[in-house]
Image (cartoon, rainbow, N blue to C red; front, side):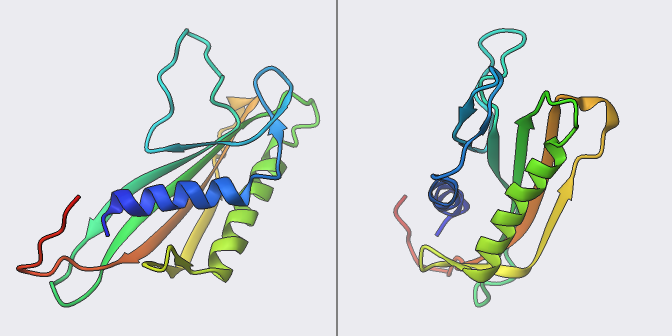
Length: 156
């Protein structure tokens, strides 16, 4: 049960969670959230904003304590939206997205019958004042993943 498998399971779960939701894209049209694993797509031009709105699922530190205890894998979700409204409500949209993620995973802490969310989950906003019309938020979480046992061969 590798961090790669956890990341892909999270991408699929987030796609399901937000399947019925739409947000403004860079062209001012309603579109589904783009869910990306590890990195945003490469830019095709200097001002390429086609990846908005998005959630980026990134693997962080993987900690192995021993071969008898389960390991942990840190995951950071980055949320990015564009909102050109002069009422500056983009942060509210980001807060609603992160709250939906928070509510879903804290009330459903087992993912794919093999990964367990640790109860501490942190949500935050990126508080840079001059980023308009871009707004960002983050969800940091840690998942329990099975330990690697000595002598056990895993096929990838």
